[in-house]
Length: 590
Image 1: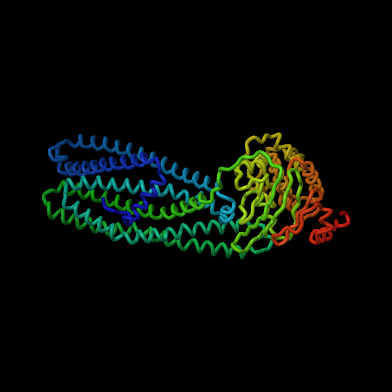
Image 2: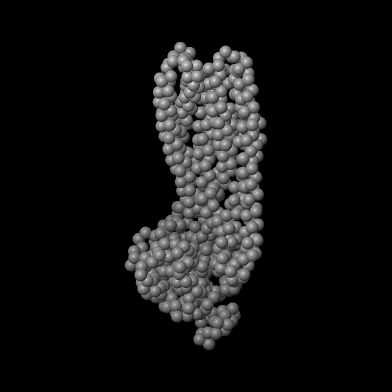
């Protein structure tokens, strides 16, 4: 069969990609190929029967030679053709069923593979991932694996159909068939540069599509700001620029892909005309065979054209698979270790000369050392950009120090299993994002073992119980995507309930009362105060009234701990804290 993929190296790449995608389902792919070959043989037989039967009817022959030594009547030939057509249809339908199931399984497995790699990757890797990238990888890019498998199966099927037709044609008229084979081989060489160009342009189009998805996700998340600042026209200009940038490589890929079919048809028809002319000259008396060859060769052209289309489809899909594999490999290389020591509680947390920076030679935290006791309520204050959030990420185990150690009862946090530490700790972010399900599921957050009673208790502790229970659905009230049907304060309190529902031993809160009114803040403070002695609570807050319940308060400035003491001593000894109290209007109360 003629080589219709770009080159030997590219064919190896395609086969390697197919082996990775199909895995242990090679048997299904072989079934697709086998049914295609048998279907091609059947189709070739039907074409020969049709051509020779038509000539027999034209010549008014009752009996005619269907093949050397095989004579039949017109009625018998028609019945045989009908039987072969029925068998070919059954083979085709079965092959398509197997191919469809295989393609769906492949894209499903790729999505599972991507999801697992994403979930296991560490927070630094996830934080670097551009907005919208996961969505595009899961949807468009992963779907390309199905396109690649379907295109490859089609390429193999069309190729085998073409081979079957050529074998039958070769048996009837070798000269014309040999000319066509030579012409098809020449076509493969002529079209090879075009296919390579399609591959390169398709890769650029796939990368541009990922970037476009990220830009759309970023702009789509800023609808409120767009309206508030009145920059709708400017947003339109940014959108237009992104659309143009992604359209150009897509247009080039479409144009080049579209050239394959007409170019092939033009060259192939020229080869067929030449072949038929030579065959007629060499076998002038074999009119029946020439008619059959003509019909078979015309069908060969159709399969050859389909081969070019499926070849372009394979080459166009392969770059997306390279992008997907690269993304999964990157995520897997940054997977959080699943091993480590298991613990069921702790008595102390210590930062021992911890330093950390997001960029080399630019530390955010410098030689931070302190101790926290179990059951203590600790506040953290400091100017914006002083390293408070970074300290929290280190405490949660989301990042590892560049220098020094985070010790839990003397054990390095990096040596404690991730599952064990997340079971003991919980977090309330400043800008919470909720699942778009129900209030109960938002609080439960996919964790088994949290009952509806636990959900209600957590909502009550977060001062949201009565508001939720007053709704018709109670805790099973639906919540819109990202919690958009709730107010900002309600989302914050649901987030607090989510953190409390798991009965954590360490609760870390980043500006937990920033979206709450004064009354709700007081109730949250009372709820947190009741956790003293049972839960270690760490609160980052700019609103100092939130920190009135703290046993000790830490002051961080420029990545350095400038003070860590009781509120009374800190007010007497730390200038930043004292000035903050004065600016808050509560200095006299201390």
